[in-house]
Image (tube, rainbow, N blue to C red):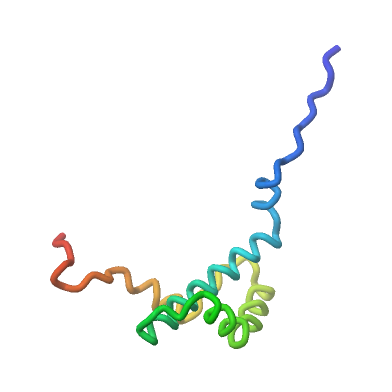
Length: 99
């Protein structure tokens, strides 16, 4: 008689990828980086991650979390996100490749 096969326990990296807490961290980090990019573009210089983090926490995190809580399965598109995605060609006109 053959012994039943045992599944090996998942490694730490696999657990981390499936963790809802880790997924929430990644989503929040992405929003902070997006906020950093937008605010840096407005000011004309890199504001840095720490400043973007603190500003995002003070001004945007509560709304972002409540919207995620209300519809966790749908990706949330903020107006700033749409504006950032429309800007696909950032090269100056003289450098753009011809199609």
